[in-house]
Image 1 (cartoon, one colour):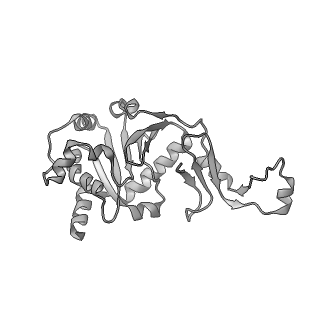
Image 2 (cartoon, helix red, strand yellow):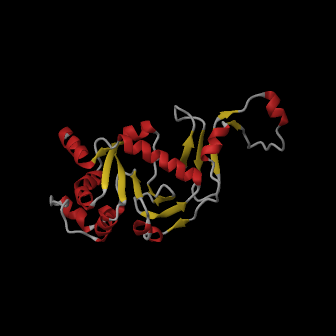
Image 3 (cartoon, rainbow, N blue to C red):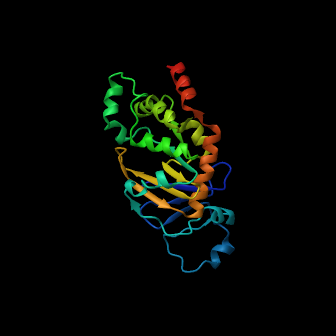
Length: 246
């Protein structure tokens, strides 16, 4: 079971840190091991399997979850949010590819060399255009490997259609994302208030989403959004950069 990074107050990104253990209500704490004999002597009811670490109070103040761990929900359970959000729907994409893309008819057309950037509007793009006309924003940052994976190349090729509908899609190299300490999981953030974090299987198939309004989780997502958005490059510019290196 893979740990999910929650947050850290370390400038180096190594320690101290909080992680969530998915599908449980447990948090893993990383910090310096307590070795002070006087402190250890005052610890009570210590089991042989237990150890103790030090973390600053600010880490728990900023990142410790304050609500119960959310349950996994079908992605369809948040479909209404893409119409009902009031200001901003923001997405972080971190994976090398998605099963939903590979299983779509557009994938094969792309493999055949067809232009998939100017296809007729679908339900998604029609809704994007409607929300943009109402003064809302659809934004996303895609993490791209160097060189891009096949799945990321597909997204770069198809992105102009979404951009034409009104989405602001930007791209960021994985090396830069790691330097910034961005999360390694996908999420949607609605109005800086509702966080929907994706769960995938090993084949990149969406299993569902964890939806929460926990202040600590939402704050971490907002911080990731601000850092990613500041450094990310618009799709058209990033696509030119990729082509120039081929």
